[in-house]
Each structure stands twice: as structure tokens, then as C-alpha cells.
Length: 497
Image 1 (cartoon, rainbow, N blue to C red):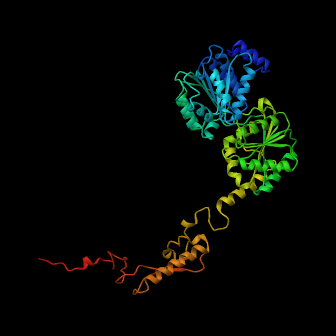
Image 2: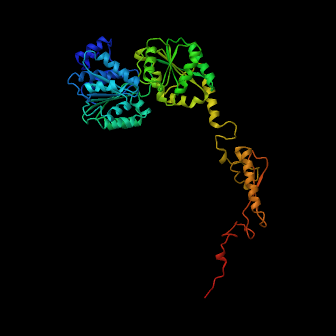
Image 3: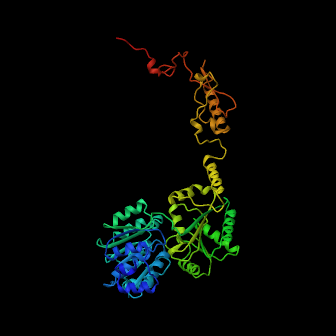
């Protein structure tokens, strides 16, 4: 099926043809007719499937009728990052070239004055990050009571970045009769709650299983040592042994992005860095340099993991195993886009085994190792040894509650072992000190009954523990009543009338 059968206007179809698009993707095929008809849409699709055009094209068709008023835009698109917002604005420039629409891009790191001028003239489309949008609203520069269409893009990323309270606040300022288009790659419970709250009888469009990687991406794992220098060497090894055209190298922390960037630069790689602490000018310049091939490698945090449309990325290297399994899908989704083949490799240290198993559980498949089948076993053993302790005597079975059998024929004399007997010599010493203190406290009493307890397997000798002293010999049934702790008032003679 072609775009001609999706209900788009002739102006939009002309722009689509000029842009070189011929066949709609599955998400576009399902979502565009519903959006053109004015229905709320809940779209779930893996990254790289063309979700942006799924809401840009129907919005252009519907915006052909009517004009916006000053400070009262007609449509609002919320994006989690500046790069995504700028990318959507580029789509409007390409696909909306036949429309005389004013698009206002409200993102941080840019002067308020330029944005205010566009809003004052009347913006048909506002593309914004939640923080900057709320800044304009609080300054009295923007009113949302004229919004006809709301788009929440990359909703799960909004959740990860803590924008859900901001989105709830923004949605309360919008008209009740608006149309809402809600797109996400995954559907965690919090996102489902938000969708149920702000969408009215939505049409659910799910063109791929949640949290799945594109079939065109080859995934591999590579062993790496725990130390930082060895891990960086493993990364350089991997980059040299594979024929790489260009690649994005993902790190979990912004600090590590800088370290990897400087390391690769020292070793002669053409590399740039991208993370949230850079100002907008640096981030834009770095992305442009990577797109046009000025730099071949990009060390980045997860700010580059969602929605960035760089079609021809040949490789993805995960320097760190992602903390959240869903982030793995978004990271490797930067390669293998639009039907192209891609390659994604991840460095795995022994301490990353638990996070790796969570990713494989989500994918419902095991990722092959570059180093061979033995790598998985070695990593598993190292992880198990970390989990079970490092020689301190702590056993998986729970040493505290384990009972030790006495010699044959003396089972009736076996009592509970010392509580900390299985925790090494230090625990036995603590027990010995407690025993000495108790012994000295009861030294002034008369005859006492002593009960011998069998020693645990790690104790050097049996330990005796004194029993509670009694004022009179204990009977065979043990102490009865209060023993020698009878209060004085109870010992007074009772007068009988």
C-alpha cells in the first residue's frame, strides 16, 4: 500500500513524494488513517520504525484549515530531549514545505527572545521539551487553551527522565476536546496509567512486540575486565577487529563519556562526545559533524539513545551494560534503521552478569558471545562468587540456621549451636567475650548447673555456657515460678483475721 490510500491531503502527498518516501512503514500504515480521522491514538512500536512521520503527516493535513492566534498555538508536540525536538522540527520543514505554517521550537540552551517573537506572531505548531514549555507558560508568553492536537512522543523516555509530573501539569491546561496522539516504544505500568488518564477511547496500534530489537541488527557480547584501563583496551580492540564505518559508543555516566572520548582521541580515533552537560551549540555541532562524516565515532550518554534519526550508523558499542533493560533496545536501535543491516556489540564485565541476564530475559533470547561459549560460563562463575561472598564463611544455605549433628549415639545431648559459629574466628571470639562477662557476673552465686553445648565445625573446642543461678536445687522439671527473683512485697507475712 502507498501513502495515497491513507487519507492525506494532496499537498502532503506531494511533499512525501519529493522527500523520497514510497511505502509507509507498519506504524504509519496503521496510525495515519486514525489520526487523520481525529481519533486518539496509542502507538507502540520499536525505535526506528518511522513513528515521527506517523504524527507529522496527519497533523499537516489537519492544519491546512484555520490559522493560529498570537500566543495560542494550535498543536503541541512534547519531546524528552532537545535533539529529538529539533529533529521533529526538521521533519516539519521537509514535509511541510507546501504549507505556510509557523513552527516554534521551545528548547533549553536557546535565547528566549527568538522563541517569544515566534509565539507573538502566532505559532501553528509548538515543539517543546516540558521544562522550557512550562517556563514560557509561567512567564505569561503562552496559552494552551487553543490546542487542537497534543502529541506525546517517546513517553517511556519521559518517564525515565522524570517528566511525568510536568506532563500531567501541562495536560491539565489543555482543552478537554483535544485530540491526543501518544507514542512509546515500551508500555510500563506508569505510562499505561498516564495513557488511560489523558486519552479518550484511544485506538491502540502495536506493530511490534514491546521491547524487541529489529531483526536486521546483529547482536554480540564481548568479555571485558573489571579495571577501567583494561575495559578501555577491550573497547579499542573491538573497534579495530571489526570493519567499522561509523559508530556510537554508549556509556551509563556522563563522566565516563568524557573518559572514553579522551582515551579514543589519544589513540588516534576520530571521535566526538555528546552528553547532557554540554551546551546546545556544542551538542548540535557534534551531531552535525557525526552526520556528515567529519567524525567517525561518537561517545555518548543515553541522551543519544532515543529517537535520533541518523540513518546510516553502521555499529553500536555499549561500553557499559545499561542499568535499565529497555535502554538496551533504544541504544541498539540507532543502527539497522529503515531496513538496513546493523551491528551492536556490548562489553560485559563479571559484575555485569545480572544486568545482562535481565536484558536477555526481556529479549527472550540469549545474545551470542564474540569470545566463544566459554565466556558466558566464566562470567557466570565470577558473578556467582561475588554474590555468595569472598571467603568469609557465608554459605548460600544460611550458616546461621544450620544444625550440626553430634557423635553417634548422643543425639539426645545435641542442642542448638552458637548463633555465629559459622561466621569465622571473629564471631567465636565475640561469643567467648560474652561468655566471660556472664561468668564473672554470676561468680558470687553458689552452685550452678552447667550445660555443655557441642561446638560448631569451625570452633576449636567445645564452649560451656552457665545456666541461670537458682536459690535452691533445680527439680527435674526445671525452674518453676519466679525462682529467686520473687519481689520483696510478696514475701511479707499475710495477716489472717
